[in-house]
Each structure stands twice: as structure tokens, then as C-alpha cells.
Amino acid sequence: EHATADDKNLGKSLQLTPTGREQFDKLVNSTVPTTATLDKVNAPVDADTGGLILGLTESVISKSGNVKQEKDASGKVVGLVPQGFEITIYQKNVDIAMSDISKGDGGDIYGKDVPKGSINFSQLIGVIFGHEIEHATPKDLLHGYKNPSKAEEPATNISNKIIDELIKK
Image 1 (cartoon, rainbow, N blue to C red):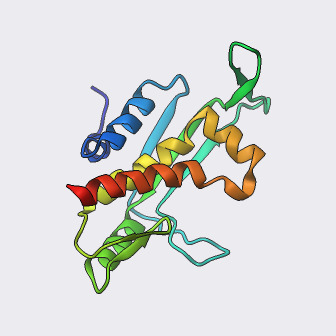
Image 2 (tube, rainbow, N blue to C red):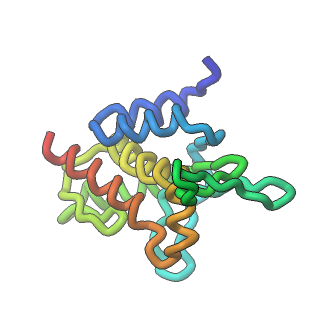
């Protein structure tokens, strides 16, 4: 009932594939408060690669700096639980990426080739949002903490799976 038009469109973008729907369920059933924003102003680029930043997930850490540990039945730490997560999708960069996908030989999203004309804007938003939702999980936060050089792997596996499901339609 409190969802904005942007919120509703973000949610709809995930309903287009089985993996997108799984990511939507993961978001709505999360015990960690998570916000999602469609930023229509900024267009950040990666300082190291110069590549477009399509989305960003940030952990909200409490003023004390404490992050709770999520443990399994045996007591093993399986996740890090911040106070919240903030997901931002950068529409200007999505527009640029969509333009690239629509021309020539297609484009590249998170390192995966996307054939020309194979996905539309709403589907691309679903790919990016699904990727960012994976980052907004305690398990992924722990993975990134333990494996900084491989922090993108789980989320990229999700976005690749969504792309594959869209292309097969």
C-alpha cells in the first residue's frame, strides 16, 4: 500500500522469470529492512574500470558499528546481518546500457553478452534488481567480507541466470 509507482515497476520487472520471482520473494521475505530506489539523476562510473555502475547495494550499519551474526543450527556463522540494506538502481546508466544492447552486436551486462534486441528496458531492470537483491542478503554480505575479490560472484550468477531465462523465452 506504501509502494510508489517506481517500487511497483521494480517489482514487476522481477516477475518476468523464475529466478526474478525467487529474488522478489527473497526481498519481501527478508528479515533485514531493505529499501530500493530508482535514481534518475546520478550516473556513477567505476573509478578503476570506467564501467557504468548499474546498481549499488549498501549495508546500513548501526551507530554502534555492530553487525549481528547469523548462525546455523551447529553455531557456524552463515551470514552477517546489518541494520538494513539500501539498493539503488541508476536509471541513466541503465538507459546507456539499453542503448548499447539495442545497437550493433548487443551489449555486456555484468560481463555476460546480451544479444542485440534480446531484452527490453523493463527486463534489464529486472536483471539489475535481481543482481542487487542478492547483495542484500546476510549470506552475500559474509561472502563479500570473506572473499573481497570474489564479492560479485553470487550476484553475477543470479543476473546471468535471469538473462539466460529471458533470452530463452
